[in-house]
Amino acid sequence: MPQLPQCEIVNDSDVLVLRIGETTVSASWELASTWYIDVEDSASPESADSIASEIAHRLGEAAGKQALWNRVTD
Image 1 (cartoon, rainbow, N blue to C red):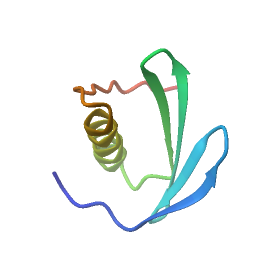
Image 2 (cartoon, rainbow, N blue to C red; image 1 turned 120 degrees about the vertical axis):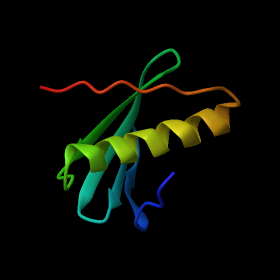
Image 3 (cartoon, one colour; image 1 turned 60 degrees about the horizontal axis):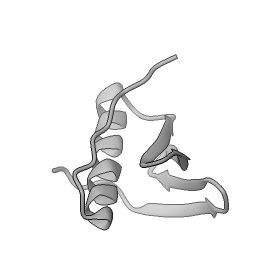
């Protein structure tokens, strides 16, 4: 798995907001066992996928379960 740039927590209230390089990522708990991750200003769709994949992987590790992710676009 590729290494992501340094990550900075911008806000950690109801929605966790991270800045990863120039990209802003919002993560929120939506439904039982479901997280919503919004990736804005990513350099490319592949970069956004890499970020979402890494977050899903880390959430899965933290929960002791396999995390899956699906891309949803507007």
